[in-house]
Length: 244
Image 1 (cartoon, helix red, strand yellow):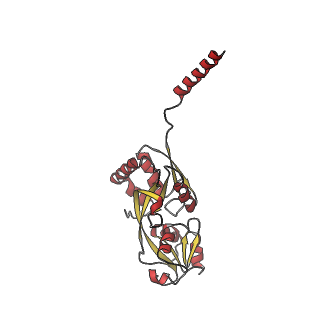
Image 2 (cartoon, helix red, strand yellow):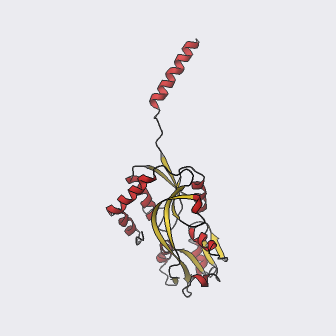
Image 3 (cartoon, helix red, strand yellow):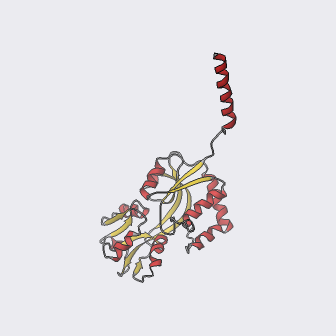
């Protein structure tokens, strides 16, 4: 009886060995959040950064799952999930130690956006109420530079436009891509942009301690995307100037 049971278990083990692949197919876990024109909840126009990253994985023949979450949550998840990735994450001194900065996607320029007020500069803004998206690179920069009168909101920052137009804040600090994505459709001449305040480098970053193992393939895919002209096509679709 014992030998029969042992034989059956042996057969089951052989079947398991034959039917189970040597290793499960790796699916990259990528976190992001909604930003106007950058990542959007629209299958037809999911955002230029969303399309860019999706194309990279397609070219590299790698499987990917992109999950939009509140921005602070996305950053928490990638810091605590081995091999996870995140985009569009701009480098700041505050963030530097928490990620591996593997693939530069684009550069973006920030501005103080005012409404029916004179153009603002960085020093004038120190005395004013500034709205910003919580846990964004712009939020980091304001803190690092010693700004104290900062109003932070979760989400994609669109609510700051309402506050700005209702004189609840004096300026919205954001980048030109996102700012234009919100203000241009309103067709309101009252918005004024400051001169560029800061240029950020924005990455597809990954977990610091256990980075995504195929970043080399994605870097190679980005070069192919650029050389093929497909990168410029993506920017053109969203009326964005490639600031790479």
